[in-house]
Image (cartoon, rainbow, N blue to C red; front, side, top):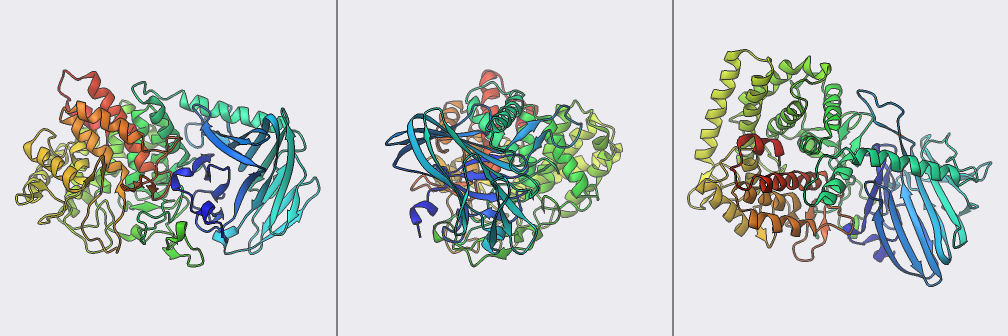
Length: 628
């Protein structure tokens, strides 16, 4: 077992994708994670979770000395430079995504080709090495037959089902045991390329000519440049904001419009521990966060596409809104893959997610925040397919809020023990009704008496959580009614206006959370018992929420440098997982994590707007527009 490879830090990984799925590329150029053809499909490469059993697509160079890497500006095209004792080689990795001649009103805005392209070019001296491909289908539960084909390609065919990966190259391919290899010896100016194609009827479009791959690279770069060029943010840290936006775009599923939470499953949130979960699904909460971030950057079409996903996934128009959706159906039952050892031996490896059956009532507020932001961005003149059922959707969602206002739930952190009267949930229920009222004021979607009921119930909910959420002995708003436990999620409610940011109690809560849950610049979600044996790492988004609360309180001299320090916690490409180990600085949890990158975007926007209005108080519309 090569533990030094498998157990590389999570921050060693870059991400490429085509808005259908993503692949993780390690610092040494090995593709260690790929689910095909969709984000939540069974993994084809999963050495990330098991070195021995999980496949990969490697590039192995003779006498390698050092590597460095970067994305081409404004794209998801990854370039890794390898320096050997004899020369220099540049590896360009991308998944082809070409522009459309005309972008439709709904549906994908680009043409994915279901491939991974790897272009190696010798830039100086001489470089020798080989590509090596070893697919392990269905999370390494099914074998592969390697079949040479006419034209020099190799089909890696799954044994149990009609599925396969075709391997093509501009240099000869050979089969070595359970691997396909493509050896090369290059001089300056020469190159060797490899193509992986998911569709069995696809020859990789190589045909011995590198020109077609260069054309595909140019088309893919054109797509991403056009997309990045529509970003409206021009404030500080723009490159970090744009990189985060590109990550969120990669986490979309263009055919359906869905937005997944992260690219991976079972990367641990605690080492040691068992906090390993599958994030390759569409959480209402996380997707709503992402919609708000897209809107803040001018990407209104992406927001509309998520509404399309919901329209098609939830035919009840909000009457039976789910916490979580699969990309093309329901979320599968949670299953443990006990034949895989897990990253750094930290198991279990899980697919599916048991949280899909939980009660988490804050999602009504999360979704209505996103819907309000989208409607405001389109001047309350949405597409017909949104407007036609807006009244019905609002009625169903506000009905849920009113019915569940007194009910306990599992909350934003998906606590797997008992349900509680969680303060964050109560605050988001108020937010839900508040945004519903604002929408109704702009669009004639509800009778006046119905809107008045929303106002009345919202006021009652707000008074209730202000009273019952405050713990005088602790001197802070706490996680749940009657609880002594601190919870960083309370900070989110401040960001949405559920509490006044300059109130003494909010100031006291911010200080209590910083002291009780903080570790330097980082913040834990909570520290109370939650049914798991080992404590998790700090939660990256929580640290950004503290930035937002400081900004709303007018403490910009603290907020701005804290934000810059947090951005420096990302890897060399500006990518973040879900959590950060406070002791080592290593990233923890699934990667790249939409939750974290959404927080980066929204708080960069918040700080920029606050700085531009430093001498004027921030009004309520400003607070609501930015999101959390």
